[in-house]
Image (cartoon, rainbow, N blue to C red; front, side, top):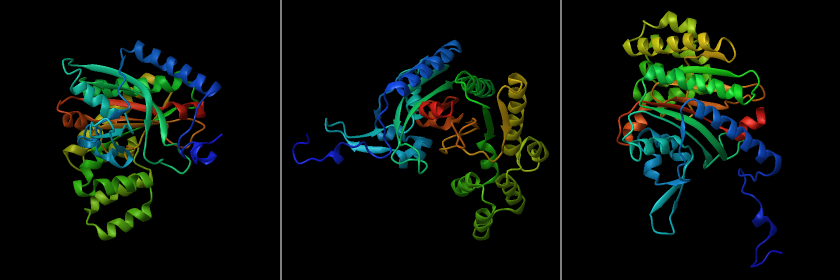
Length: 324
């Protein structure tokens, strides 16, 4: 019975938000426990941030790229504006820079719900159960390898079919493009549309040699062979990012021995442009979309008042259940 002038439609779930119960809820908890055990074996300790934060904390520094996915509301208890987290990485950065600032190195893991103001795709949910790890204060090369290797182990442990990790480096884009063009070119690289890129170049002045390299990236030919060929043809920043990425690619292939396929793609772009180094994405049979996102985000740590190397990855447990 509906009282006070309400209707049955008032009780329907919000579009993009779902109830989960029964066997699906049980399977999610089982997978979560399995992966937490793996994190524990590799020295990661759990942190449980609150569901809401002050907007300034979530959007500090490079976290501003999350602003259009963040729901902000006034606190009825008088704490001012609060925000529901759309991603947990900024919270980990805050905790490491404040509550755990006495620790020189931190290996943290987490699991919990996040809510985005709108879905990424037509069929996507606005809610995710985000799980992931962050390695902070470790040597960049050491942490990048360790975190990507752990991501590969997670995909195997979860029973994902034909797991694949694609690796790139945001430093390649920064070495090729002026800061004022970064967001536009990143969007074009994600869309992989040569026609859109050529239209952009018709109205924006890009140096010819860099335009050719960017077009190669958009065309999908910027693999490890391409990168070795052009590593020393642009500038020092491009050479450094290329060298780091090639070394990482070789090390991962040697360690994984084909159990998880590793692809190098210089055109790989992250979901959010708060990354500052190596980036990577996971795929598996049964999903045409990315099911794991990761990379280095040193700039976010600086924005929270602690200069500290930081890298990690995260994924949506609901999505993993769907592709098992």
